[in-house]
Image 1 (cartoon, rainbow, N blue to C red):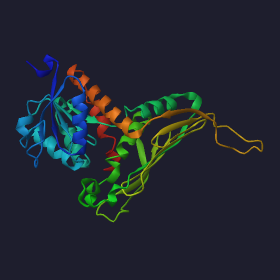
Image 2: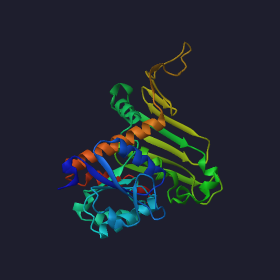
Image 3: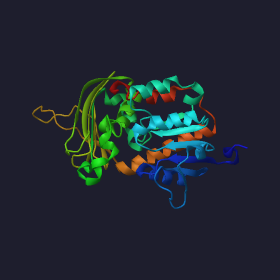
Length: 320
């Protein structure tokens, strides 16, 4: 009898780092999910869990979460495929980060591809929901420009000298920027890279800062993400008739934009609405919602095409 027919989904998690810990907390809070194994090459004991270094121990799981650095995703996927794992995989974004990885996934049988899900941590957030609603509101006019800037300064820590994020070939694009590219791509479709620049500000090896500009079908977007600059979270969305500003704590919506003073000078529009949204709490809210959504699809067996997979694969393809 399948495990979920008894009302439960048995899952295992590959990886024991910070994100794995977050996924464990979330999965433990969701009814009908049971963690079977944690996979780790180095750790032999984690309180409250069964730990293994054998992929074969994971094969009876209904779902396997992949929570290791992106550079390791492809090898893990190949290993599970070679062991003929036929159930479901939820992988942290990006699924792959190279063109060769993209080609490998494309060649997999459809049966396997239908069982691959990618976990995006922004698209189901309260923040994304509000922004999507404002984009669709015709009273706001055309969305002319978006600007996303996020930094946290951790690259100056000694512990970051050998951190996998510094070794990433795309830098913060594949760990942070990918969420917002994915979000805008779902609204506006494909994009073209106008410019991109990779740099290292903290004098570590590798990339810790990236800035790039993208042209979507109906808007232009600028992104700057850094591990080495002072902590900041700033989003700006400029409509032809409205403005949205977000600082990690509060989203302010200004409408109408055609405001002028007595001398006829164009001035800041009036604050129409504001929303108190803590970035990090909203982030975890979105992860939990996304996991519940994917588990529901799996439990109800409503996975009849590979569209969701290709939507995810194509997010970073222009950067390969």
